[in-house]
Amino acid sequence: MTAVPDAPAVVLPAPEAVADVRLVTVDMDGTLLDADHELPEALEPLLAELARRDVLFCPASGRQYANLAARFGELGADLPFIAENGAFVLRGGQEISSDVMEPEVVADVVATVRDLAASGVDVGVVVCGKRSAYVERRDPAFRAEVDRYYTLLTEVEDVLAVDDDVLKVAVFDVVSAEATVAPALERFRATHQVVVSGAHWVDVLGATTHKGAAVRRLQEAYGITPAQTMAFGDYLNDLEMLDAAELSFAMANAHPEVLGRARYVAPAHTEDGVVRTLAGLLGLDLPGVAALPGR
Image 1 (cartoon, rainbow, N blue to C red):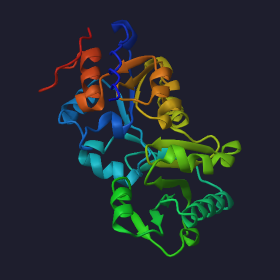
Image 2: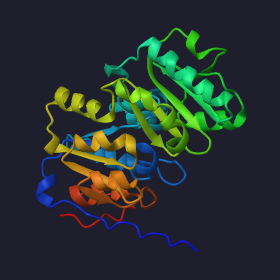
Image 3: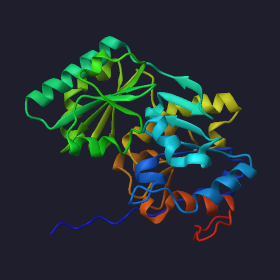
């Protein structure tokens, strides 16, 4: 029987390091969302308290903006969102920045995925535009996975025939994206971002597109420094975001590379790690939340 490694110990910054926090960026899946992919119960009082203190709370995800906005509902009305792994940044529905891919690169990535599928690999492609995401594959198993992340989704005969600005090409691998799809897309790394964003997902984006670049745009827009920024993440698409924040936290459930890159460690997403860490470090009294020792 293989031994299960112990979860890494929680590591927190000194209280004085968080005295002037003004921006909190948080990944969604495996970070803010619980084991059932639900938002924390204490999110509403948390956001209210952060707003009262003039601290921006920014979800940062590979998910589509429409999906994030629907998830947060009225709670997200004034939040900035980093969507599509940094390719689309909006606040109050107004675009702050976007990175659009070249049509010829999109066509090349899609052709590579189609070749993989023809060879017997169980994969599907999502072309992510500003107005909608687009898919050719329509079977229920694929749609069930894609529907989790894309609220505006259009089935088409040819994803390369759509008229939309393409922000990202996402590839779903039923078995292991890191083992199969990522190597197949390796040649694009010379000119573009090829990011393993989950156990079954790989995203191809513009050369300088990632969550970290999006965080820096928000910092510039609102006059916020890395020292005033907290970031929480768990997977490889969060690495640059963690680099953009001096107060960088890997979740205890994070990929080993993320644990090695972050300065601090928060409890796992299944233990309400983001909310408990913020409550403890910022001295927030949130109903039903057992805050970590902070101040």
